[in-house]
Image (tube, rainbow, N blue to C red; front, side):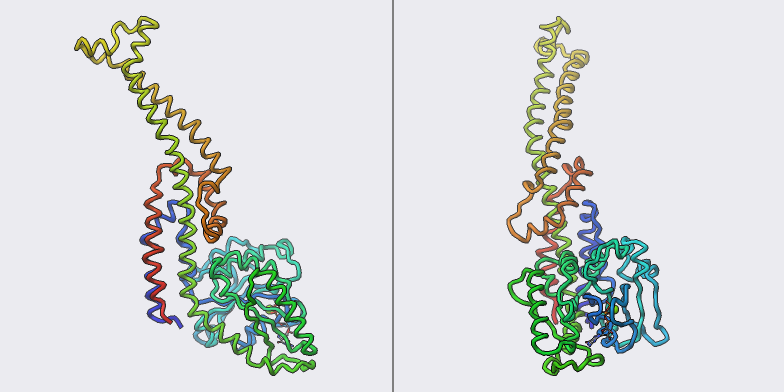
Length: 453
Ligand SMILES: Nc1nc2c(ncn2[C@@H]2O[C@H](COP(=O)(O)OP(=O)(O)OP(=O)(O)O)[C@@H](O)[C@H]2O)c(=O)[nH]1
Ligand SMILES: [Mg+2]
């Protein structure tokens, strides 16, 4: 359960984000709402896996009711959110269209995946004690090779976005298909923070009762380990829960009693979702703010590069304008005999009138305009072009972490630069950066410290 202390931390974070950083986000075309979205609702557990790996069976077992349809072969092609109903009478099925339009739920962003997806999305309110602490999401099984076209919507995109919202993600396999979900894994991984995302993912080899013997199980387990190591690129092997449904188990020959407790351990881990949620929210907020910071740093470097070029030009321009002011008419006089008496001789004779100033001012302004034209039409576009071509030269990529951040935001930063370049040379990036720094190093640090379990 979320305690009062956790609630306080959440509302403090929310306040910090809306008070201190909202404007900064908006100034750079970003929306702080995206960071705030997951804070709106309860902890989420996402169950993903191959078709028929037993996801829906497991969910029914968790909530203690036969709510989700189960069966051999791909059974369910919908995403279902299972949420808490106070009473049996409040149990209901809510269609996707209503779910994505409900401002009290965090699913509005899914509207972007289109009608075809929304017709495969729903929420069921169920009276079950476990749902009081977190909501579950059942997903359609991953087919062997799913393309977007087959489904009519971006399946991997949806999975990725839901993973981003979730506190625990269960990846479920079965011995027959122990590792055909590379794309799904990548979609999930792609949206999670690179440093900490992995600890949200739980691996489960389900339906082990269907193995004929221990050799069979070891073979499946080995295949899964191999596939996982290929997918995750990790040197250590994450724990894989070996489970089976006690109600559906078959006595094929393998004595499964050795793994009797694994299902309970898996459930116990899932139940940590509410506790994980707070640190995930802080991590997500941190990541969003660091991404923004990376963009701002890039813009700051762009601005500096511009002024580095512009300041000498402006200086020369100013000197030239002064020269033109005093000397322009002298030259004109030498060349054309006009004006009769240049400004300098008027000054020397102490006879400076309004009319003797007109030509010098025109000369000065003309020269200045020429320099500004040069800056605007030649120096500036050239720099923009250079930065767009070699963006990596304008950001310090000293750590792997920074490289990852930059990879995530580069496209966004470049399109913002393309659209807003003239504005960027005037914006106060340093001030924005110092706000971001204060948030990360001061406020967020403190909130992390305050998380007490
Ligand atoms: N032997 C055995 N059968 C199981 C187990 N878990 C589920 N089943 C059966 O396997 C079939 C598929 O289970 P589902 O829960 O529908 O699988 P799913 O992952 O939700 O499948 P899709 O929704 O189609 O992706 C059902 O007939 C279940 O009864 C298990 O641990 N052991
Ligand atoms: Mg299912």
